[in-house]
Amino acid sequence: MTTHREPLSSVLETVGETPLVAVHAAPDEVPVYAKLESFNPGASVKDRIGTYMLERMLDDGTVEPGDTVVEPTAGNTGIGFAVAAGQLDVEAVFVVPERFSEEKQQLMRALGAEVVNTPTEEGMEGAIRRAGELADERNGVVPQQFSNPLNVETHYERTAPEIDEALDGEVGAVVAGCGTAGTLMGIARYFRERDPDTYVAAVEPEGSVYERFFQDDPDGPTHGEYKTEGIGTSDIATNELFDPAMVDELVTVPDERAQEELKRLAREEGQLVASSAGAASVAARQVAEQIRDGEVDAPYDSVVTVFPDSSERYLSKGIYDSFEEWQG
Image (cartoon, rainbow, N blue to C red; front, side):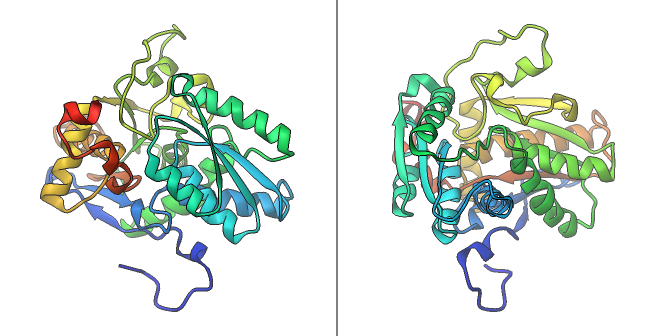
């Protein structure tokens, strides 16, 4: 499927304009629509920030042709930046915690990037620290998706307008997983500016600690391990883009429920998506039911979410196996 009718000069011209598709299991009264980001050339939503951020950084001189960018990533951001870097004459190095998908790391290397692993137990905080060290050693630039406003701007300028056009502006609620939170913040800001009553829900896996943004106690709740990749946080100090004032509800989805949903999406709806999409679908359907039942006020009877990538990135981890096998 393509929206392009003429030959294009670069793969970067295929980033964005992804399909918006109804989730069949949502209530009829309040449809849920999902942006299918696996249709991007690097097969994830992170292609958007890779292209947008690098182009803007080249425009303003933060990065020059031939420079090196060093980025901490769970994988998809690395692929997105690698796709763009290869076309924009920029060298790329990515720092990835060991536990993340080997498929993603192979693809980063295939695109010409260098991958540096950090210990799993150090989490993304360890990857962020190491990226800073490598940038100092190599005179490189860290785009830093976790704190760079260009991350949010990408989705405000590109993703949200696509949704707006597809639904003629009739978006009642925005529901999206939060890793860096750039996707949710950008889309939410766009629609809140058009209607302040737009309902916004952030999605995290059980074990993540986004709840700390909403509590007086900075040490609670306790961080736990989770298998859902690409969303969640173990330390809110790294999530500088997240604005809790923009969020009406935080939905926490257990790994098991996310996996059940990604399997259902494949079996019943032909959607080959990963666990972050499973979590987003669970939360979006929940919000749609709340709107239908009058528990949530929204300006329109519709919910929009984002399916960030494809399940093919996680087949070696047994994403379609039993829950016990996937967890193991």
